[in-house]
Amino acid sequence: MGGCWSCPFQKAKHWLGLSRQHPDLFAKAVEEEARSAFSYNGTAKLPLLIRRAEAKESQGMLWTEEDD
Image (tube, rainbow, N blue to C red):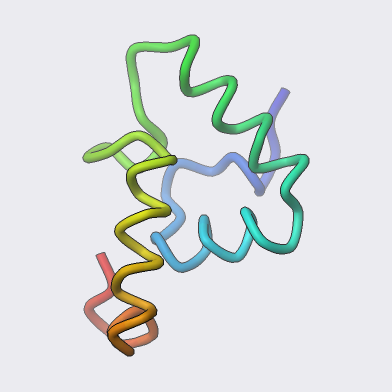
């Protein structure tokens, strides 16, 4: 199962948007990631990536050019 919603090249802000706008697809991505040795982001598993993105967003930093 895959598609644009599971692209490993997405930035944190796109994963955050997916988690909010399409929680079902985000949940599938989290499940797939949990079953594998890799992470979509390459640096952190999706739940941690979302927590970091939410923290940046709350500080007004997520939507800048340097968002990852």
